[in-house]
Amino acid sequence: MKTAKPKRPHGRFAAMCLLLLMLAAPPAWSATLFVTNERGNTVTVLDSNTLKTIKTIPTGQRPRGVVASPDGKWVYVCVGDSNRIDVIEVAKLAVTRTLPSGADPELLALSNDGSRVYIANEDNSQVTVLEAMTGKVLAQIPVGSEPEGMRVSPDNQITVATSEGSSLVHFIDNKTLKLVATVLVGARPRVATFTPDGRYVWASSEVGGTVSVIDGLTHQVVQTINFAIPGMRAEFIQPVDIVMSKDGSQAFIALGPANHVAVVDTKTYKVSDYIVVGQRPWHMALSPDGSKLYVVNGFTNDVTVVDTKSLKPEVSVNVGRLPWGIAVVP
Image (cartoon, rainbow, N blue to C red; front, side):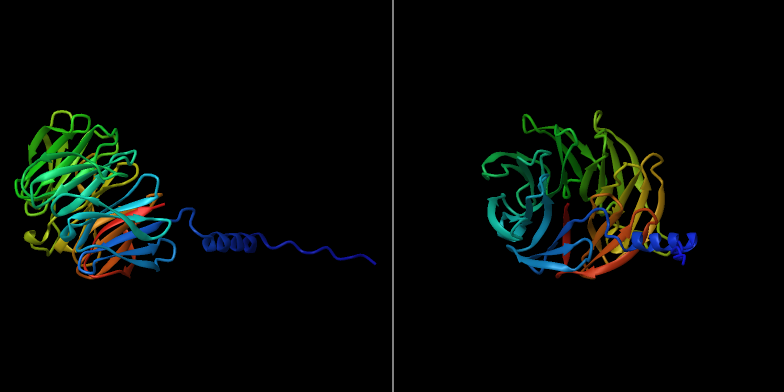
């Protein structure tokens, strides 16, 4: 008596099974999201895969700017009304130390090796530079009024700071900790960021409604980017945060009360799309692989997840009261 051989699955059926397995597989990356809640005096911690809240961490008064250390061990939070930096130990998901910050810290940046902290002191028109681990003050650098945006260049040589009240972008030499250039831009600049190659600095002007592109070598404005959303009054279009795509081909710009994120081609400086998000998108961050853009919406108390390939919003998840900043730890 012959034993019947088992039939092989039909090719199309087998392919379908493989596709279902691939779709069910977890993403190749995972991360932890840290969102500051300005009115809640907390940081909401989210799992990037499930988008569920892992923990809510109490902080000092009015947490705003937030950055993660390059090694992913620490998250630094500006707590403006407490005049300090709260440092969250990622392994414990708790504030385990604090650093002096100068008056009313708003945004901050870390050196590329994580050894230094550069802090914008909004109330006394200066940038404070600290040793990250000890809190030792290395310098207090006078800048224009109401400094806010802080960013370190990819080669770690320059830090830029924006001054809202003076409409200026300042270039600081990280070796000498002295100003080397100051550039006039549109009214009330909020954020500045470098292109991935470090050649250009993009600075958002909230009241001016524009983004200025500055040549990092000549310190000249080489392009001014304007925005226009059909049916939207111009005064509602207020650029704030700027995030570059991983390959540097696109810039994502949060437009505040316009409730949109603009997508700009970095070669042509043309707006290619506007993405609808929550109310008052303020700060943003990319997932580790660059496939998702996390947009913090202050007035709807949530974070919108945008697919960076399709440029479509996927989901919004609730966080705390008046969320402001976000940091991503792989």
